[in-house]
Length: 316
Image (cartoon, rainbow, N blue to C red; front, side, top):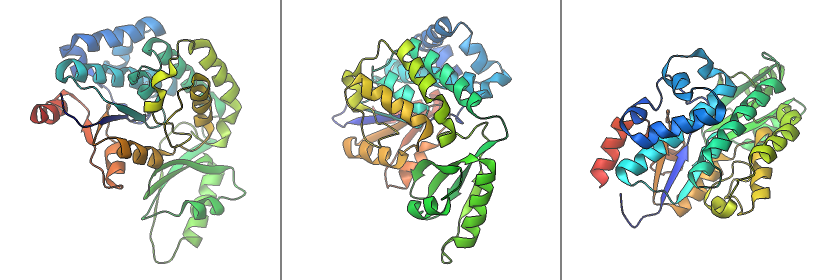
């Protein structure tokens, strides 16, 4: 795959997992099988069996996160092996930011799967099940400042700024309930909105996650010794909204801050679109494609080899 255009690749995060993800790559492309074996050797459990065998633990956060990251790197390596796919810029939504850092050569896979497994475990332990929740607010051109004001005094906040038309909030269930009431009472009369509760096990990217920041920082120090920040400036930061600095301490700081702060995905999309003429979403699901549509940018989604063949065989 050779052209003169700059290419960006983006990776979805938690919620994109599905049984059998990556299996076609694993069975047909040797480097993909090696990717799963590398992750398994590092973690001490069979990642391919977890992904392919219908194991219910695939939806438990501490297993979901390393499984998704492994699958996405497997797919990326498969695309490189089969089509010469070699992106110039990288981005990822929430968990996907870790995949992007691996893809750019900033973090090694073997250490990163340990980091995200611990991250998932800490995030689940931060808040008892049933105490926290998340919901998507969907409407045209959402006024984020208005939304924040409506949540004033509540133990909830903006978690994901996904697009102009979708913002996710996160926090205590009671605060989520109250936010829905306040939106119903105060939303501009000329507009309509949808309030969609998300099926999640914890209030991710909320202030309720602050209690685990120090322990996650320790995890990054323990397993992140081989972080090579030279290419970090090619990877977007969910926390800042722009590209990372080529500084390992700053990268780690941004990853810690990401846990309890909003994912600035709308800004990430724009800075990637400013740099790249072609954007591809690689992962077991394709939630990011529609977000790019809202800024008028085409995003080609690769969720399996069949989709890859359709996209890359016609472009080469």
